Image 1 (cartoon, one colour):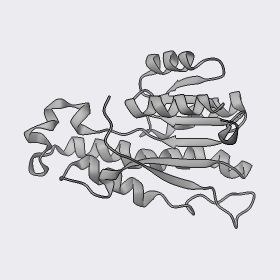
Image 2 (spheres, rainbow, N blue to C red):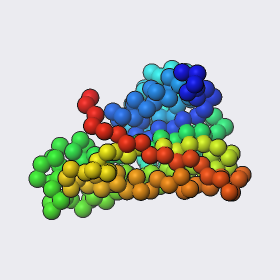
Image 3 (spheres, rainbow, N blue to C red):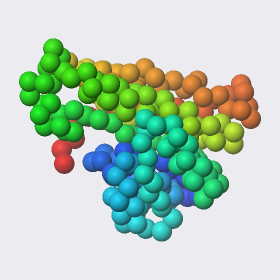
Length: 201
């Protein structure tokens, strides 16, 4: 793993306790990064961080609340002195979050407004807020990478799922010129999107 070594790098993963988030955390830890697990489930976050070994941290975070993200950012910078990597992984998939929505309610004409709002808040606004708040220290230090987790469904959605629409939003949001480095205004932080296909647990 020396070629891909992330030793002494601080890597943040939102939605860290989910199926995909866990795998991101494990891969980053294996590459040597200090992984910060960010999730709404504080207990699971801390337990998962401890399971990864020494040097990792779990923090309860709501990606839709700026004050929650700012508090987490300040704690991370105080402990690790920097942020090198942000993996925007947190997302709501209505088919898994609430089995009831997998039936009639998941149909576009019956989809509840409150779930529409919540999905956009987490899946799109959350990406914006995390990139803005955690990207600021990267901009100030003149280095860092942001990785937005998208989905193949965001490009070739098979139905009218709201999840698909939000993942399309995540893809179009990702722009390598989104965050300019303050140390070198002419350059930018690299911002990528990673397409995830069908996953079976």
